[in-house]
Length: 422
Picture 1 (cartoon, rainbow, N blue to C red):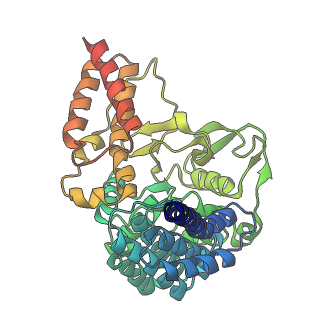
Picture 2: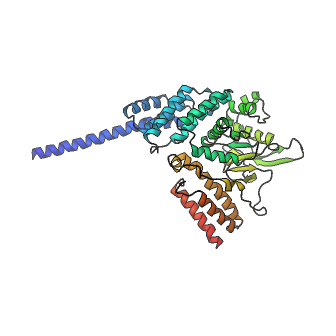
Picture 3: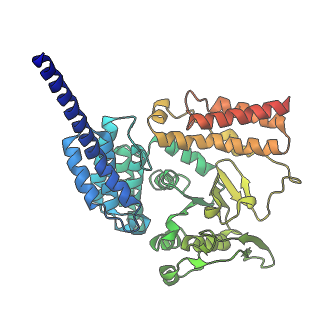
């Protein structure tokens, strides 16, 4: 009996030790990730501790893709924390961060770990695109091209996202100003324009980077974008208190022609930010001489409360000087919708990247916007035909929905259209 109980005791001890060891390992695995996310929330982040912890964790667990993912993010943040310091990026740090994400993709071609913001493929585009932007700001065009090309060689700038952005650019008229936001639009667009010389007539303006000092100067000097602010003013301009008021864009060729709208505070219901002031100036200086577009579904904090003046043209919204009136104006489906396609894109390239799935689903959202507009005017027959067109061009077998909830939302909405059509 004593031997039996001794065996149970040993088994119990083994289980307890195993549980404690598992718990300790879980804490060790999570601690570097926890420290990184803690610093990412801080106003004055210091990523050195996260780097030390994650470096040691990767040494212990070299095949853990999630640890490498967060180590890559940490190295990138040590290189530069945000867009303000982008022009100070160091190539050697970019390479070190890149190597971690490359290894993530080698270990898990379809990454299964926790995501911070971007998936590993999109993050490669971001870090190499940032370095290329730093070179562009210094007029080092060849270095920028090399950085973009290196990023693609290492797994960034994947074809689904590049193809989406080709079609995004093709949605704009010649010599347009396109207001973009987000790494999955801005960096691929810059890649296409710099490496492929694709639609380089368009000036892409990132709505986040215009909050920096260096980027508006770059737009003025290298992209021939009209701005009334001098470089000295750009150096000092900051956010300011703001009350809702009417602002105007005036036609320089005919000063009696004005475009007026109400600009409300964009931050905390009390302020407009530096970038808002610069974007306002960009619109005022360029609206009457160049087509101005926003990426579709832009938020009011990005589009300066111009939503009612934005004409739906598929993946982009064109700024007009007159608000659309649903009670009196007829909805016209954008011709761009019929040009969109994923036929050239490989299913496997879509499936491996969460960001590719999200980005390409913008085709569906562009269709839904037009379908919704038609339904609002009780034009159910044309809305129904557009649903059929969308479903045939973007089958879920090739392009999954972002989530089950999103798929259900589309399905329920389309059923309502079918119900009213009948």
